[in-house]
Amino acid sequence: MKISKMLRSFKFAFVGMAHLVRFENNAQFHFLATLLVIFAGYWLNIDRNEWIIIIFAMALVWSAEAFNSAIEKLCDKVETEQDPLIGKVKDMAAAGVLFLAIAAAVVGCIIFLPKIF
Ligand SMILES: Nc1ncnc2c1ncn2[C@@H]1O[C@H](COP(=O)(O)OP(=O)(O)OP(=O)(O)O)[C@@H](O)[C@H]1O
Image (cartoon, rainbow, N blue to C red; front, side, top):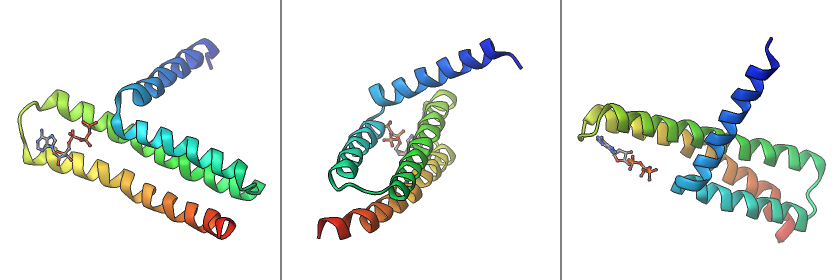
């Protein structure tokens, strides 16, 4: 196991994260939502287990968004023209984000709404 190689991989992953937040519109929306949820979590004083669930929900959405953006970039590289198959690939990748985003929103409602009302 090479630590230096692992650290290099971490560096590339952080570059990928920075790229997502700087250039991807949907990721910028997730970034704002993440800040809002963290703020609400502190403000409404959610407990340890609720933090764990919220952190997992947010991480899953971020992860799906990263894969979706990577698939979009790859599609744009291999096909610059309109292509029905490329369209389906992009739509299915986007569906992967939507599944998790809906689940995360429901989790957020279950945790936050009873504390607000
Ligand atoms: N080359 C293509 N061929 C066919 N349909 C495409 C193609 N590119 C995009 N589409 C359709 O347009 C939709 C949006 O694609 P696009 O790449 O613009 O994604 P996006 O979610 O708007 O992301 P971004 O704003 O980051 O580019 C796709 O889900 C797909 O239905």
